[in-house]
Image 1 (cartoon, helix red, strand yellow):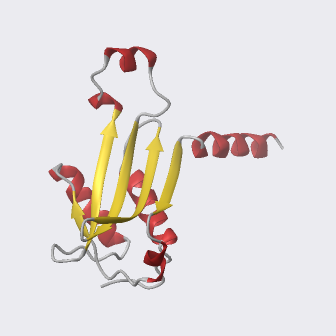
Image 2 (tube, rainbow, N blue to C red; image 1 turned 30 degrees about the vertical axis):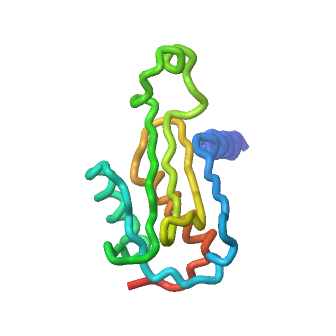
Length: 140
């Protein structure tokens, strides 16, 4: 009984460390078969990590693709406001994907987290996007 209680507390603690959000700007995107994405991220290291994880999740990444994933990220260590540093924050960072076609935003998903940033957070967000867009088959 004691072990079960400890396991449940551990699950609750770990599950409360990140939040996933999503929003559809165009409901028709749910009916589209998105065969590829182009990743728009200026940070070269983060971009390479994103490409690797998208490909591991069977999402084709191509520069010539009409669908673009605009990436926005913020890490608390990048915040220079003395007030924000002294008061703290409810999260240590966020990663957001805006799926666009022709400059028009179709879908957005975001993960906020507390603690260290790692590839697992990227993977969680990619999986959330796949689930929301109901991708049923691998793209390759």
